[in-house]
Image 1 (cartoon, rainbow, N blue to C red):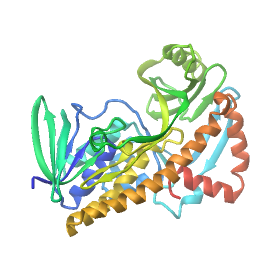
Image 2 (image 1 turned 90 degrees about the vertical axis):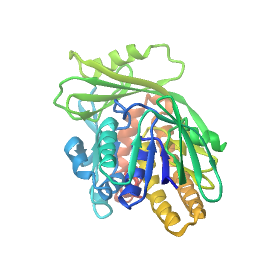
Image 3 (image 1 turned 135 degrees about the vertical axis):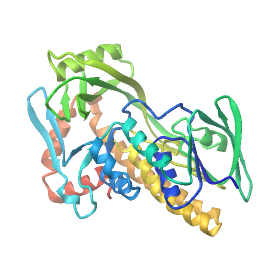
Image 4 (image 1 turned 45 degrees about the horizontal axis):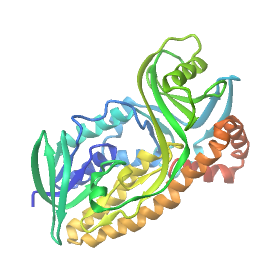
Length: 379
């Protein structure tokens, strides 16, 4: 057997799983089709439970050096220059070592994790290596991939697909993403400029835009719009930047426009092959829980893989499938679906009214505690 586990995908999910297994003495191969880690910020928010996991992986010190942290959920209405939502995170201090929100570009997250993987004995990380197929029997999985144009193969006890929304592993298994696509679209835009504020901020005086600082002088703007809106993305970015940072020049760093989904794979496991992260489930980015849910998959899957390897019982993977599918479907996907439908009612035009209403409701201790546990993924 060449490896204990082969992992397809070196995003945060695949890297966390590989690091966890290698730290426990397992032989791990991580295959990533891209030439390097991602260059852009993508998913920048890291919730409390995920920070606990990063601590267990021995990388929290580096994350703290490179991130921005906030001790409350807050929203500043730029149009009226007022705080319309503020929710302290004091209610969860007994549930986590990190009662805060951490903000760090995904590019940095991946670099930190990839460096840790590279420094851990037993872990091999190969870039420019795209999985092309696999076969499995009762004893092992044989994985094939293309590495710089050459076909390579290896055998392992298990294969884990952490290869994203368009997962090759999921496609080969014949699993399907079941669920819905929302009628709204979201655009993300990162712009660089100097501004003393830290955010988060909102403006609806023109286009609907939220923004948060994700590193020094780098801002993430989130633009909400109807699918058939005629204004181009470039025009929306210009208007949004003008609303949030009037009179200031800025540098366009990166932007992306996409439809949003609430979907889950028809299954998570077949034999010795399992899915995690976006390969297994997609949820609305509202609430910033997608990447976090994937990393939390790896905590459960890592424990079960260690047990399956030590006891030679691949049937243990079915426990992961049952537990995480139920947790995601009834947890993160349901919660972000509720948030999305509430916040996007009337195409987001009453977004600030909703936040002001929440600000009043969340003064009630029972409601606030339940909401904070849900949003921070500690429930």
